[in-house]
Image (cartoon, helix red, strand yellow):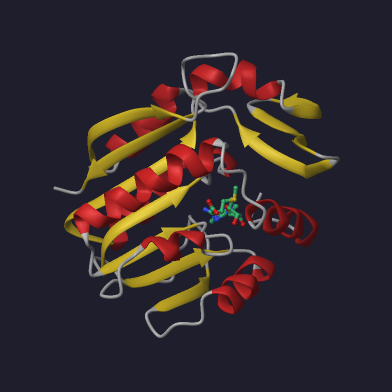
Length: 224
Ligand SMILES: C[S@@+](CC[C@H](N)C(=O)[O-])C[C@H]1O[C@@H](n2cnc3c(N)ncnc32)[C@H](O)[C@@H]1O
């Protein structure tokens, strides 16, 4: 899939903009990213698959934020929500980021990598745009909890390693026809390392009621 279609983008906007304070995103993931950015204080930050740009809320005023996403619906929403001289939202793809080589200090990508079939081409792009010693934070579905994750779908089908279905958000809402590539943890780590990143921390986060394994992995790596 190359970005969210308009229907899915609108469902996503609605879900993100009615946050659940008890949910994994609000309790674990957003504070973790905020802290990561607060310690790093990058001059230029690229957010791959930025959606409507919520990570741009987490930067300090000295950081230049560049959100990249293939969905015009999400980019338009981001521009309405975050009109600021130091925030740019540009059309692009994890496999083709419209930025110069070695032009950013940090890359974040939140809940995007599980939508990508070809991890290697995306990690190559993240590596290419980062300056030497630049940092990359990916937050993605934890392969250890795919079985649990399947229980969150109203219905789904699996073809090869691609799961497609309607993700149940509760209250009669869903993310319709959403995709999850069932990459293994080895696949993910190999894709990060094969381009030259050094992984220096992997943290499980977002506990499901049924598991202590965490629904997400935050993987921190460095271009050294
Ligand atoms: C679950 S949303 C996450 C959005 C945002 N990172 C957040 O956490 O609010 C997934 C995002 O990935 C984007 N996406 C899907 N395929 C992509 C690709 N090939 N390259 C870049 N972004 C992609 C979608 O358009 C969508 O904005």
